[in-house]
Length: 113
Length: 113
Image (cartoon, rainbow over all chains, first blue to last red; front, side, top):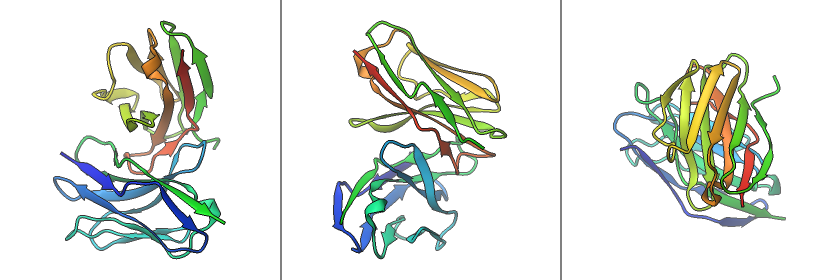
């Protein structure tokens, strides 16, 4: 079946540090890949996406590259801010399949001033 | 648009009582999803609708849970009877022409005593 595996958290960084959150996937076919973010007390919101191999999604300084050879979609940011503290979810969907997102377990990020 | 609207935002009830959660999706969206989020189990998809028709309810925990979407602008998730293990945050999300870009509501925090 389809699944997403994220690095376990929590992750704690100092402001301006470099961030990487690992995400790998298993899918039958060629999925589209997503990162969603959940700020405290809120619902999830789409952060970025990539729909085919070698695509790079980017938004708000975050980036992730769709790597088919390693089945990965790692999230990176060069300099995190306190306001980036949130839970980050990697997800996938397959066209033509049951139309739903498969989410990873989420990674809690805390950025300290 | 006001975004996805959920009510109530918080619900405290006693075991055995009926609980009804409500959701108003973004106007024009044709997909609606109900999720449950707990610390132990993470984010779980309960059911989703396309054009008001339930497509996949395999995530509904048991017969105590039911969901309806009588029209394009309203959906309910009902738990009857409620149990303490149903305590969670329940999210409604909607999307247009596919599950990729979902817009989440703020969630209903349910506590069953």
